[in-house]
Length: 224
Image (cartoon, rainbow, N blue to C red; front, side):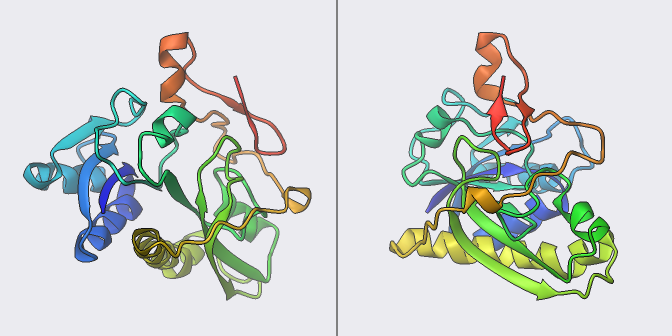
């Protein structure tokens, strides 16, 4: 498949390498180009000839999305992928969230999993839609932690590799037409605020309308 990858950091870079190894063609990467130390940015620049198009984080919209994209994959991206942008891709868009959705929606899911001493943690690949972290589930896995792992250990040893594997699996399922889309039970959803103090997601498709971000309510829905 021809994939547009939007993301950042080591996780984004690991997903990029897995997608290539799986035989997919990453035709565009949306990453923080100005950050020369970002791992996904480094990978994109080093493979610029094969990628074809690299765009700055915060600029992905229906105009900047190239033609012929089969699937948009979000891997550690804090940009909201709007409806028009998703519709530019043949199969839409998927993303990875490091929690067992609908639990722990929000940008600091791993930290809240640890703070709440959850005995079971996990990750979800879901279809992006207009509800932040609220789209149908394509795949999930869990790990029993006993509530004893720190956030860095939980992420690096379990949820990071889990996310790379799940995105790889779902991309293959999308390609062969067997991907799942199981609606989340929104009545059981939990939402926690950002511990980092950055409550806004950037929404590139609203830039031309005079907005540059969106607030998130307690249900995880986006509002301008």
